[in-house]
Image 1 (tube, helix red, strand yellow):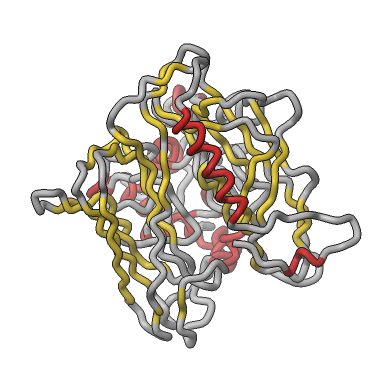
Image 2 (cartoon, rainbow, N blue to C red):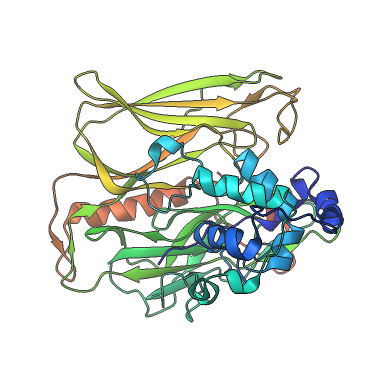
Length: 461
């Protein structure tokens, strides 16, 4: 099932001129003059919306992480009102949301490209007055077709989880908190996970758009709008037996009276069945680069880093990460014979859309290769997202700081042949336990009290 990626509703107020355009939109189309070849909604625009947008923009839109599409493009009246903003989003490349350059078409799962002819048609529909046309002109199958993204009855995209965990009690994020990164235990319900198990799917369910991201050793990284982790057959992550799962939360929101929120983030897991075979144990590396300072006002500051690959691996996915000044990012591999290949080029990085780019087929990278990673930042006044263009910026955890991370998910190429339900190799079990323990050792675990909120000012990695 294809899981949608949504436009965070908190972003709508930040899109220039959006509100004024939408208010004026009905006036723009009061007296359209229809030429014979002018596109209409039902005959021309609706099929394009169905193929490119309706996974998110539908009646009763599906919800992921507390956010959902703000309107249906299956409904003429709604599409007409939003028409000017639709054109703006298409012309600027903001929609459909996808960061990987066109050169990567066909490489990654869940890609979101729109063909030029479809884009031009929608713009022409808007320019022609966003005309309705004849509802009977729409193909009957098209009007009744399912877009295939309704939330399953379980309330989870992965289906009914084998294990669900959440906070012992909801986390209070007070009105004075703008940016906060606590580390929290999620207790494992007693009797539900008494032996190590192999994860085939993991879904993070952020409590709302104030959750900037979630990081866990066993669940990966979650942000509002991102779908679950679904590993290829034979790939998995081991969840050791433990009374707790540790998660690093990152909250970011406005401050002031009435902005406090109660977060009840959850996570769900699907496990492999006994007798299944795990050949590839998924590993991850954040690949952070910290030794740099972005000068105040610099419009295109570049930083670079390298990482040596010491054994043959299959590269499963890549997740670039920067903050508000992030502009572009590139992963490149240099093979042992000196040949270089661009693995991922994100020319217009958008902090509000943090994608994980997973290969349709994991990519082989031989031992002796070198990853070259490059990030570009815009710390100038010309960047509308820049918190302070007069400030030199370094690597830091706050959203108003910056980061240059190049997370990868991968596995060694030698199949392990681990049969689920049989005894686990000691090295696999110890590594899974070590990763969880290291996350705990690096952080101060949040302990909430009914009448003590001093933890709101505690710092956590």
